[in-house]
Length: 261
Image (tube, rainbow, N blue to C red; front, side):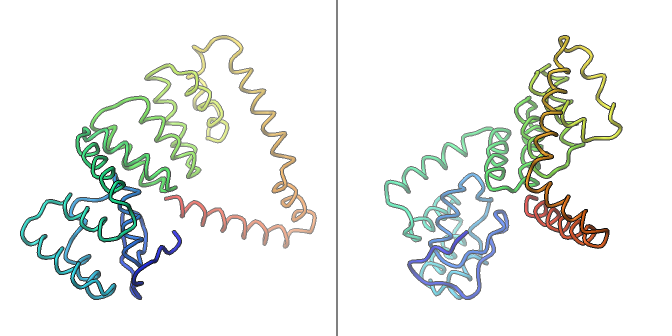
């Protein structure tokens, strides 16, 4: 997130743990709260945040007022929207719309709220947190949509075995051809290769042949990708060059996946 700044900038940021975000200004804080309202945790406004506002950001009046209201037992909603208004990031009309959205969120069932949290984490690329939220939603109320979303998260983190298990579960629940198709492709990346073979026995004749053709076409296309050419070039340069290339590539993949969890 780029720095959003019209007022003061803190030398020491406030760490918004749920978003894994370091906040340097009141505007940034207002943006994060308003854009990801579903993710605002209970008791977000706490003494630590009030001290940061007063001491690190120099917003002494706001920090002390929020702390006073907090100690008086003020409702979380009013504390949050006091912060959002003071950030000056939103117009009054936008603040009112956010207030209505807050009430809609808190009128949801726990299962619906957890699923929406998962959707928001997914949009941020926080796939591990998204899985946790979807799993919680599934615990409260099982449905195929949530199982599918869990599978999608595991695909993003390249946990193909877990993704396959999610789509197997979805197919067994709903007999959804889309789930069977995903499972077919994922089974190609799992061991043993025939682990999910029994799942395809009841499908209409010829369907797996169509998917196999798609798979082979995908492999052919992958072989012509620029990344594949780089691998081939490194291989032609000799063992040492290839191992060095592979080490760097694996490290970059690990870094990419860490960023997704």
